Length: 466
Image (cartoon, rainbow, N blue to C red; front, side):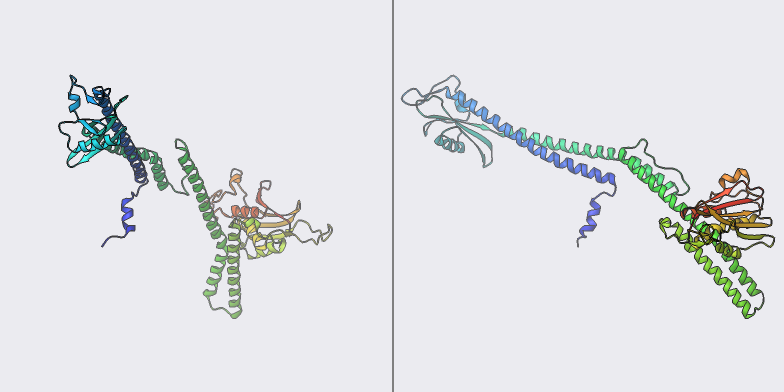
């Protein structure tokens, strides 16, 4: 039972790129050398045959000097070198044979045919255990009577030379193929060495923690372009992972408050038996917290999408949203939260006096919520949420009377994970302020820190008007 062809082919094809390129080079070189060897040896044999024919015609011309055609009939003159007439030479006067070698045999019959046909002809005779023999007929020039000289030459030396050249060609081809394969493997190995180095580097690096990149120095143009593409890919992967980590931290940061409310309500509910009214109140609180969690998730996930800036902006009444947010916050007992507007026009400027921001209500809550939580965390006695109009938009100031921000830390306020004093006894992961700024910018607004207030801290939110 034979194995399927699909199983046999992979065994014949090398697995490595180096082996495959070497095999391609070897196959191409073999085909080219076979063609060149066939053409070369064909030309060599043709050249050797022409040399044999020239040798035969030279001998025929020498023999022609011994033939007298000036008399009434053709006759062969006696010469001091009669060995020319004994060396495979036939002389014919018309169809009549005048001279022939001592051992003619089958060749004499072929010579008669050449003489009978007349003109200059050459044929090769072989077979019956004899080596190939070349025969050529040559008419005697300027003869009064037709006379033809046929000469013969053994082709064994010529064929031996041609065979030796053929074997030498095959040996040279084998050496050249071996050298081609070895040099190709060496050259391809050296060319692919940077690829192996890049592979080892990619295995060792971490897409998030490492700042290492492949670069393009001291590499061929193709590998330099590959390195640049891989560097860009690593940068995108690192940015995506950093964004996912940031989103996870922001979700954890924002969901902490509603989860704390749910846990607190459940602990209070299980502490002792409750009336039906108290049970309904607990259920409503938990439902509100769960709805708040759902809104937080929807808002953050929507803002994290690439098309967050193209989403429908919507509008949100500023003061009602701020009051609701203040009511839902976990306000310490020693802190008072105040929500007001800096001015009320009541239609004096052609409006109804309502402040509306050009963002969705849930997004406005998520922008202000981290700022309010930060103010409640550090306030001594009061926190103020104040809203007013500002250059065609809406401005919201979140102010507390706490210790304020150290001047040397002001430039790092909006960097994720950074806190002025991690051991100050206050909770927080340093993600709230960066989240507020990112969400505000996604809606075309901004969040900034006002260093002019001392003591205390003031953060300013600017959003487009609704």
